[in-house]
Image (cartoon, rainbow, N blue to C red):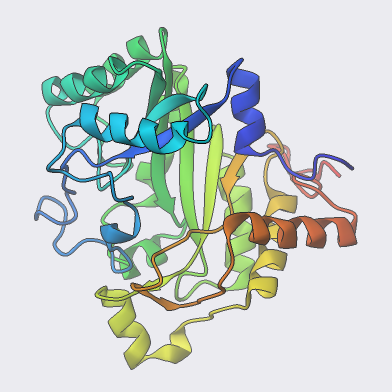
Length: 313
């Protein structure tokens, strides 16, 4: 089979007649899980320094960050178009007037064809969703929710500050407005077994997701999870790259085949990364997953069970 999985690149090729590239933006937001609204200290694994490229700083305007990002990519791809990616922290956590101003500023930059907005399931008020619905009628809009896990006990353990029921509600409300809806999950969180992770693939397949990001668990310096690892390393399973690639293949087999998969791994700066340090680029890891799928003669969705519970293999 040629198409082993439905990639985000394939999805973008279907949506746009030209190449598009996301440019990350740090618009200076915080998070309700940090400022006391929901909790303090944030998620136990989180250090936002792992997300932002050099041009992505809060002392620069949205426009300037996009212009510098464009200059970075245009050296190799001068005809590239762009999606403004509001990435750092919770990018719907402000009043709707401020959010509209920031989103419209991004869309006013030449070459920007749409928005990708990263947020939490508990931060999507109805008035903002109504605005995004209107916006999605004229430009590309993808709202990406941090799901992380479908197990409430795991969400409590990592101090996530919301439940999986809130995730379902946010994803369903967003997709019902005709807005492309993405999710982000972390594979290998403490306390989750292989069976739990594969059950998660079935859970997220029941959500009306357009896209999904898979990330391996990374232990980052300065986080509470790093301290937990030092105190109780037996609570963590840190696979080799090959082991994780085969787990991803297992996950893909059970994932709904029309969900576009954006990535399998995350790349954190080595100066911040404690473990696992595989020393691999994203494309190198992709080859491991593809090799595992080919060796098994399998593909995304082969073991997917639809709403009637029957396998689609």
